[in-house]
Amino acid sequence: MRKGILGIGLVALAMFGPLAGIASAKTDIETVATGVDEMWLVLAAALVMFMQAGFALVEAGFTRAKNAGNIIMKNFMDFSVGGIVYWALGFGLAYGGTSVGGLFAFGDGFFFNDASRGSEWLFQVVFAATAATIVSGAVAGRVKFVSYLIYTPFITGLIYPVVSHWVWDGRGWLAELGYIDFAGSGVVHLLGGVAAFAGVLIVGPRIGKYDDNGKPRAVPGHSLTLGALGVMILWFGWYGFNAGSTLGAVGQDVAYPAVTTTLAACAGAMGAMSAAWAITGKPDVGFTLNGVLAGLVGITAGTASIGFSASILVGAIAGVLMVLSVIGLERAGFDDPVGAISVHGTAGLWGVLAVGVFGGGSFVNQAIGAGAIIAWTLIASLVVFKLVDSLVGMRVSAAEELSGLDRSEHGADSYPEFVFREQVADPRELDPVGSNGH
Image (tube, helix red, strand yellow):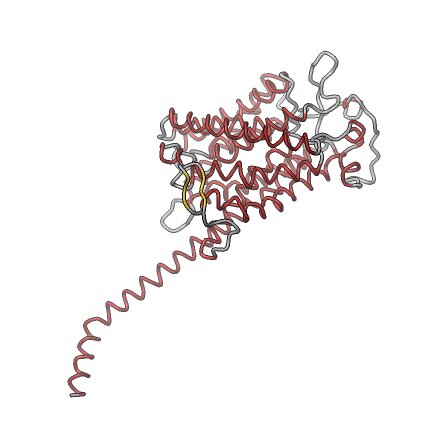
C-alpha cells in the first residue's frame, strides 16, 4: 500500500514539479518587479522633494537680501506643516474611501496608516508641497510669517487634494470627462499660480515697487547666482516630477517623458531669452532662468504624449508667454517678485491646453479642466486669504517691511556682516542696477 502511494507521489512530482517551479519563478519575478517599481517611485519622490531646495534658492535669490531667511523658513515650513496636514487630511480627500460625486474622496485614507501604499503616499505628498510653495515667492517681502503658517495648510490639505481627486484618482469628474494632465501642469502648477495670484490680490505690492504715477520700478533680487543654482536644482528634480509620474519603472517608458522634459526646458530658456531681448534690448538673465521653469511647467501635462519636436515648440511658447505675462501683470499693478504667477500659472495654463493641440487630447475637455481648476482655486484661495487677513492680518507693518522680514519676523539677519539701510522708500536707492527687476 505504501509503495503504491509512494509511486503515485513520484508520478505527480514528475508531472507537476516543473509547473510548481514555473509558478515559483513567476512569483519571484513579480516580487522583483514590484520592488523595482516601488524603488523608482521612492527615488522619484526624493527628487521632487529636493525641488524644495530649488524653490528656496530661486525665491531667495530673486528677492531682497533682507528677506532671505524668511524665504527659507517658508519653504521649510510649507513642506513640514504641509506634510503633516496631507497625512491627516489631504491624502484621504484625494485618494481614500468613496468618491463623492467625483468631487472628493471620503472614508478611509485620513491619518494615513496603510503600509502597502507608502510609496504612493510619499510621491503624492511631495506634489502637494510643490503646489503650496509656489505661493511663497509671489508674496515675498510683505507677508506675516504666522499668516503663512495658517494659510499654507489649506493648500496641501484641501485645495490641492480636491483637484488631484478630480484628475488623478480615476474616479474624479475630470478624469471621466477625458481631461489629460500626466504630471500636473494644471493640477500642481496652474493651481499654485492661481493661488499665488489670489495672495498678491490680497496683500498688494511691496513698498516702493510703483512710483507716484503707478509706473513699476525695478527691484532687483540680491543674488542671480543663488537663483541660477535654484533653477538647476528644479530642473534636476523635474525628472522625478515628470518621469516619476509613470508611477513605476517595469513595463513603463520612463525615458520618453525625460526626453520631452529636457527639450522643453531648453526651448523655454531660448524662447524667454529671445522675447526679453526683443522687448528690453538685453538678453535678461532673470527672464532666461524663469524661461527654463516655464518650459518645464508647459510640458508637464503632456510630457508622456507630446512628440519630441512638438515639445520644443511647447517649451518655447511657454517661455515667450511667461515674459509677456510678467511684463503685463507688472504694468497692471500686480507685484510678483519672482514671477511665480507667470511661470506656474500662465505656463501651466498653456501646458494644459497644449495637450489638446499636440498631445492627442480634446481641446474642449482641456479648456473645461483648466477653467474648473482656476475657478475652484481662485475662489477657495481668496476665501482663505481674506479669512486669515481678518483674523491676524496678512501684511506686516511698513516699518517691518522696510527693515526686512529676517529681522522683524525672525530676529536675525541672513547676512550679518552686511549692513542694510532702513526706511528706504525707493528700492532703487539701495539697488541702483540689476537684472530680474520684478
